[in-house]
Length: 456
Image 1 (spheres, rainbow, N blue to C red):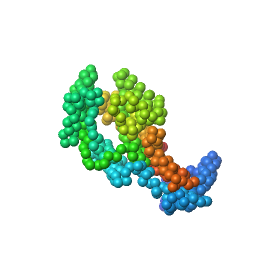
Image 2 (image 1 turned 135 degrees about the vertical axis):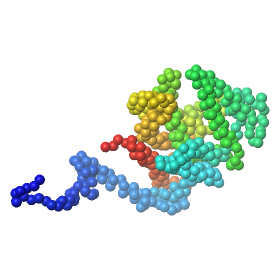
Image 3 (image 1 turned 180 degrees about the vertical axis):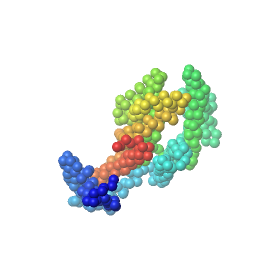
């Protein structure tokens, strides 16, 4: 607009932008916006600062400034004003990690840890190539290799199912060929054929007899390969699971429970929403049963009562029984988490998938489950964290996990001092926090990567 009045002023240059007020930028601005934005916020900030001043300095003084860092026994940790007794942790560190695993064989545990880390890290990095091969190695090959390394392999398979009732050995006798028990494999093949026949009959009721029999065949073939590999004598000394302990047992229980409970929980969630009444009823009974009993009861039942209901001569390993109990218990809870995600999927997604001509399995695998699982990532990770911490309950069935091994170390009179207990539990807290916080941060990373968080 042009002004004809000579007293008017027309700016010919843009005015330089002025800096924002000093009270709204930098540290002061952040504090005003986040710590002192209101009277309530100010009171909470003052209380928080008071708690930090009250708690943190004494902890730093105890665990670092007044701590004892060198010593050979309890004498180093006695005296007035002595802080944490870190020589106790150093002396018992091997016990905390390996339990009572033989010292000359601990290299096998180290290889299992190293292989697990090498396979897990690429699996967690979403942009890492070769995910399918990586997943096969981690979920299918690694458990078998870890089992052979930790136990020594050579499981001496001599009876599968029919021989439990004395039906095979009278026909085949004890024939060994290159260390392989023929009676076991005859038992295995006959059991496979019987199960395939039964599955075919059941599947034929819904017009899928051949497909059901083929599925059973592939499952038994995979199981047979695993048993055969585990039955090979690699020359490694046998280490029974009662000698395992410490962080090794904690990770074995937690990883096994996490890896097995998630797929089982997905199947149970799908079964509970199935339109087939029998499948839905069985899944509901399973889920409600395991959710209705505490984990301690499950561990007691699996450890002390389950052998009473098994055929004579059948006595599964104590750690294996605990693993099965933990996995089934966790699967029931995960099933409800996944079911919540399935119910959140709009009906239009199902209708759109069916309109495209997708089968039920394709619709679930390609459309529904990816969205449902993405939405419940925080709840799934929360269940995993809870499972990791619940591994400490195995101590009541005489399995010494990390915390159990720590408590066992407290009974050593060579390290009995007033500060040993506090030092040990502080160390345990740091270890558990490291794993739990890592899982929590990774879930947040995945949420951000998949853009599932709905923060505004």
